[in-house]
Image 1 (cartoon, rainbow, N blue to C red):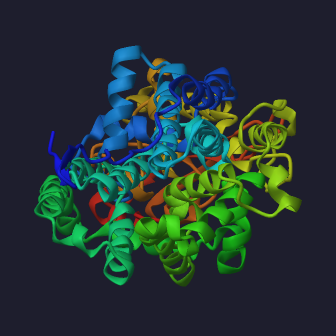
Image 2: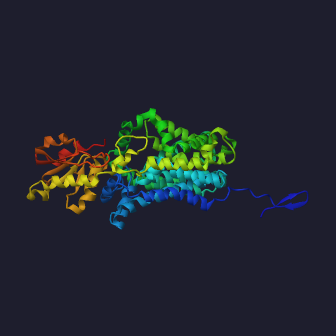
Image 3: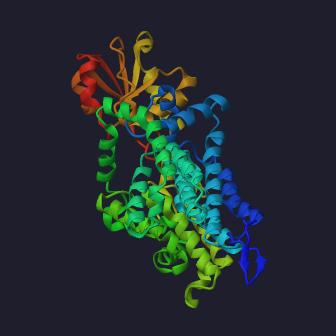
Length: 506
């Protein structure tokens, strides 16, 4: 231990105080509560459309895809092979990632100087926010993005206190992994870098470990980028397609839906945390995170992006808000919102609006105050495959061996490949998004069982087109209700000429 001479006496310098210890048991219980809820409802209703796509894409493993990198198809395929198609197993990973993200969020509160209450409030805010619950219910790119963004943020926050450069290498590794799920984290780093230059600590940008971590992220992304370049950069076009969808009211609905995604009462703590990061002296070292959130939100509004694309920066705002409240900050008239009863009621409400806890008959395809319309994407897949099978069996027995299934949308192709395997249905093809790049039907194929309302796009290439079945309805509303299934025969044009014009991202 070093010593200091003071008035002829030798004294040991006072050791710099670090963050308060992590309240392990309390944080584990707080992060475990949403984990338990997610596991209880994990098999409610059925597969989500994107999950079926990931399972299908996993059978066509590639360095990249038109709409995403390789990680999700790889994970889905591995889980499917190991568990034999278990929905619970597929949903277990998102639930565990949600748990991990809540724990890391609590670690950010710990780094900010938060004690037990602040750490628990942060974990609960993260775990029960609608953005987290919706993504945590099903395998999705967002359920990977959220904990990885939170992890990178925690590593940066910890670095500002310790100056341990190995943390920046870990941040590079976490970024490399995030880039295999989604490219959004590039925007995170771009905005963070600008904010570091503007408000500091600029020293971080001069650290070799940071750039070594960046090199790791870039090198591991090269195979996927090469695939994108060879295929005309479909990911860039995909980004524009998503922006053109104008979901949730477009730019006008961005901020209101941001409040919904962050969880009503939790949104108040989040907003308070943003103010603290931007203004409070005790958060001066982390000022860049507050401005990064503002900057990223502004960018998304300008490009007409989705509110969910800034959810990865919720955690430091919740942490700052919880820490300030724990220290006695906030006006008396609203501080009760951060009380345990208010948090408990909010958690119950967010579970009700985010997860499939209500009867199937209550599921609707439109936004409702007490309903999550994403649930409508999980209904009716067995009935959908029934209709496809009915159309397939309507073909003459001698023609079935050469028949193929073509679907309007990629989720439907994934459903045929997954559920149809046990019914001896042929493999599915689709011109939609990632499935379009798996290839066209073989030239030697015969009749087509076509699923979709846009059959007119293929009608000119076949001499006989007839409606063979319709997806049956049932309790609740599904996007699949009434979808027509057709049989097409007498193809007059090679698939090699049909397919380039049939491929579509929207």
